[in-house]
Amino acid sequence: MATAAPEKTTAALSVARPLRMVSRSDGGDVDPDRGSKRSVTKSSVMTESVMFCGIGFVVAAPLGLLIVLHVHNRSARLEFQADVRQLEEQLTVALGDRSKLQREIAAIKLDAELAGLPSASRAHYSASGSTTSPTR
Image (cartoon, rainbow, N blue to C red):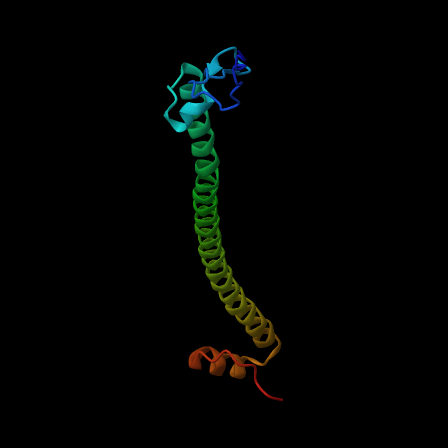
């Protein structure tokens, strides 16, 4: 009698494979098969909040800089306009003083010229109120 040798089957049996665990740098284990549905850990929440704060500061810094520049330029422009107004007022006062001094100098010159003329000519210029010098 010949006994038949049991045949070895090479067919793979469908067996559930055990989950492979990957270690993280912070010591926690991550299940690679769970993908994006993994549980939220304390460190991931902390990382997100730090990133959001950083992004907030990165966005807020240029906006704050723009506001500061706008306010500075406006104050510089207003200060410049105030300086111009002040200089215009000083120029007006200086021109008024100049005109007054010119009139006083003209009166002094007329008095000096009249002092050198005969008395008849002096009376004529004094009565007419002329400020021009007589022609000779």
